[in-house]
Amino acid sequence: MEGEKRLSSVKNVLLIRNGALGDFIVTLPVLTCLKKSFPQARITVMANPYYLPLIKNQVDVLLPNDIPGLHTLYTYAEDFPETVKRLFPKFDLVISYSPDPDGCFANNLKRLGVPWVIKGSPFPTQPIFSSITEFLLTPLKAEGISTRWDPPNILPTREDQKFAQEFFQSTLNYHDENKEIIAIHPGSGSAKKCWPVKKFVELIKWIKNDFKAKVLLIVGPAENRLKEQIKKLSEENDLFVVRNFPLNHLAAILQKCQVYLGNDSGITHLAAAVGVPTLAIFGPTDFRVWGPKNKKVKFLSSFYPCAPCVPEKMAKCEHLFCLESLTVDKVKKSFLNLYFQFCSSFLPINYTNLIKERGNYVSR
Image 1 (cartoon, helix red, strand yellow):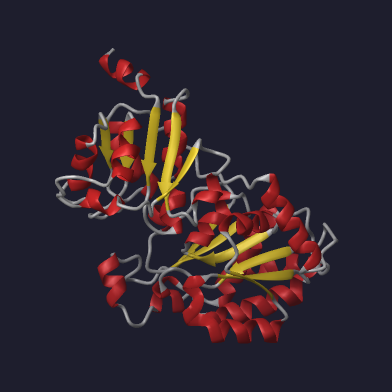
Image 2 (cartoon, one colour):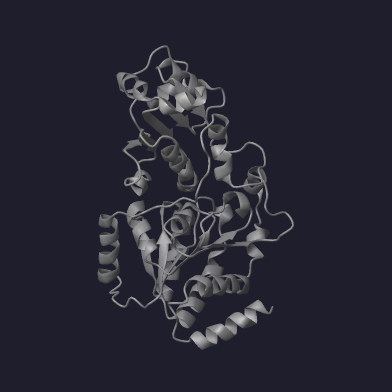
């Protein structure tokens, strides 16, 4: 009864999630669990302002994590700026996934008058063998909050969908609803997670030749190191480059694609969360932990002896044999299986040849 009383007394909830795009998306099930457990509560999410528009139709308040004075909560300050002192006391419950090894941040929230603070670790410090989302939900479960969860679901707004429609019609001169659009993202926040660009080139040529599809090449700030390679790739293969779009616009664009292919990256999580059939390539990281859990996702993971490996080992690795060992033929096979499972209504011109080719790959 005491636990039920505590749950019913919560009227204002704050969820804090710092980190990269993928970290933000795998935390969204925490948000849905909070909404189920506190249906009458006003829920605020604090995160990178670049990511917040993705969930503007799912929460009551969006709060950027660059508020002046917020950094003082990570110190042993005797007092805090007025902006901070006015903000936090209105919350009955704060769930924080900020790095806080000594508990300083959580203690300062309590000093400011927050009655219930749940401290969640942003990343596991020991190996885990289930989804990262399960790990993130553990502290909520310990506090008696329901942790029955569904995979992340991002729903572009009507305005974002309108932007995507106009983009396809103007930039791509796209009017044929039966024409395949295949999105490819060759990058990742870490170069150690990237399948070689030269192999992406070979795969893209095959897709354009056999599927007669429009290929969208997704490029973001993390791909600056691949700038020249991507420029050459797009010019030689007549690709459409989607570069540095706001994430809410990119989400709506991805939602209109028939297939997405990419590495272990935040954009891959985004594609999966908007419901695109997704092929995710994994090398040094474990897809069972870090992969999207959405229904239309297939994984292609290296079986190299040392993969997957721990982050410290990945950072020191200079050869990336795990990703090099994934041949273009293996990716083609996985791509075809994904395509025929989820995209049967978009049959390419040489459909018969692809059926034969798929059979050849499956029999290998």
